[in-house]
Length: 613
Image (cartoon, rainbow, N blue to C red; front, side, top):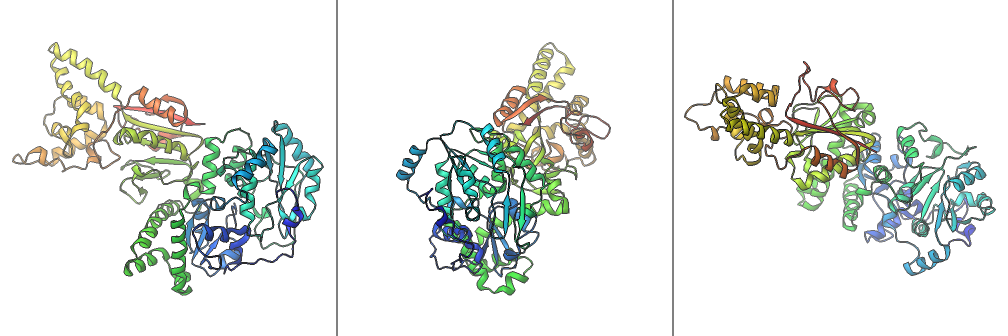
């Protein structure tokens, strides 16, 4: 089945595409056929959306797809979604790698028989030609490099594109004793199913190109190795179709992908998984019902006429309103969730303009409150500025993997439940680029406890100044864990004028408490009004630990516990830092942990950094 009659499977350049689709390329590789079968739509149903023909790194959109008079566009990932949104007002849906939706051509028992016969199997998927593009490279050099890098395999299979079999490329590989096969012609609607079976036969994959097959390899848990070939020659017979000739060779993304996959590992690493998810949308996989809903939404929009989906400035909001008007709540809710995600992406892109990719891939400030810098991507539960993205941080981070060079959050982690802190730091690790830095600032439990014990001993000995400080350090220990009204006992303490141990409190909390005290004294609370009822006079972001509207500490950290969490999240080179020192380049210039005069913003803090490998 796999290694016989490959010429017959390859077909010919004159093969015709037999499909019911309005946009004919939808059924290249059998994509539309597979997707319709997955969500129980009949073969003859015409999808009212464009199905992208695969993974591409082009910074534009194929004209055939762009010009199709259909209301929506299906692609792998939010990364491709973001690029396409610049060129089309179609409603965009990310659904992950298409191979997920296909059934293998070979049943499990038969597959196990094949695998037993082949033993440990290496799969080669070389760079391929197309209808109108011929690709040639030094096959002997490619095989030599591969043999030096990969050993211990019983069988080597070469999966060639149909066009390269017609060109006789398979004969060159067969001379080296390799088995050759193909997933079939581009117009064969069983292509994807056959390709899935070929992947299932293998234990690892190697290629001299970066494309859809890389995403499929990682998704199917097959380690992938990229080996560059020499002597590559591209012969064009037409210039109006996408292909390797118009890939951005110097794209930072491509350079990064090639670097990541140039070192082979018998197990797929977290970096491999993250970058493949970034471009392949593993987290965008849809259930049969979700995919069917996408197709039905596209159908509804198509039935409203092309004047609607071509001319409408905000297709998605217009369609949501239409569903609400017609009492179609399920579709309205489904689209509304998509609209929220698009809003976050657009917010980022609009703030950084043409350089959105480079800028958003730099520094991220989470739970920023009103302390942020315009050179960073700033996120908080509520937006206090157009430069701040509003997002519920307890629902995960709304960014692609391997996006940022630095992630920073100050006095945020202690506000999460202890169990969520671990997954939150792992999410921070996910969105960092390899080599990226995390900087975490939290109240220093060790410092508070040590100071408590010192002040306790001195207070017992009658030291009056220590006794005043003791009252405050007890508030630092407990108030934000037990308070039941805004500001809590800390706010009541600050209302005292004169305040006991005022210099000590300011020394502990820095300029922010100094400003809060000044505001309290300029707006004194009526003596008739109990302090506990007036605790909401001041914004908690100004009087407590800024960064969140909530004031409760759900856990506390010291050097050991925070370091352990960072290590468990995958970080290395973990260290305690000073407020004015960081591995993040020029960090002190952003004035996040220090003031303009060089003083420390939150003196009672523990600051730790780690690096993503």
